[in-house]
Amino acid sequence: MSDLPRLVHETSPASSSPSDRAFSPSCPFCAITGTYPSVSPISAPDDAASKLDPEKLDPPSFVLYSSEHVVAFLDIMPLTRGHVLVAPRKHRVKVGDLSPDEGAEIGRVLPVLARSVLKAVLPDIPHEDADYNVVQNNGPGAAQVVPHVHFHIVPRPPLNYKYPTNNTPASSKKKYPRNPQPSGRQATAILFGRGMREDLDYDDASILVDAMRAALKEEWQASLPTPSGTGDTIAKEPLDRDTELSGNGGGSGRRGAWKV
Image (cartoon, rainbow, N blue to C red; front, side):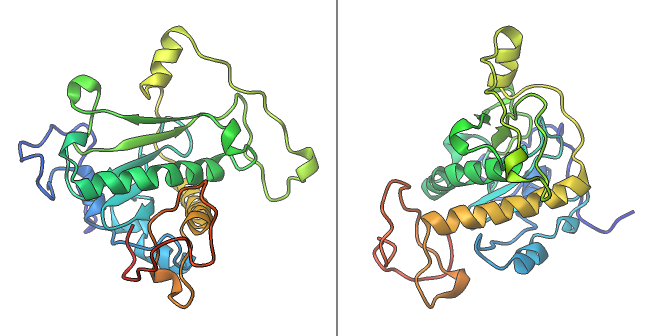
């Protein structure tokens, strides 16, 4: 038997602990959020890879973002390639249980994470042409399986999509038609994030999470300029994507330990 911490199976019954409890020993997401520390999204790849090593848990957990309040990781049984879960670090059962700081950070980072996931999963499709779901459920009657708040980011690639390789010339990259508007049961399944699931391919997940971290670093640096001389452990609050970035980052000039 492995000595590594084990994740509780996804269909475990809901804990009877209070909804504002910081940690639930029976919660698989608490096992993840309690294992991985905060890591700056603009840190060196080797540093992030070491601190976010999937093998710290059994089964492995592939974390692409880990901050003071929020952790994002690959779903262990994805609906599509690149299916990511975004959850508060502390055990919160429903959205209404989130603290102001937790809710604010999720609101700030969810768009950045969505763009990063799509950039890694569909690198040859611009964000404005990409299809994806952001789904969130509260309570078993609303199809919530794990009683720990989480948002699903589910990429919806075009039919017969083929991931481009490094050897694929730009001139030969395929242009895909837009996905048709679904109808009937298919529309309902897509709307509520349902469908056939498969076990996560660990070899592919290892490659994919690295690509997601790299994409997140690019997105983060584009919207969160780091003041000069502070290294990669300092960052400012997110700027509006429509705001022109000035030399000082357009912020108040506050400096401090990295957090979102």
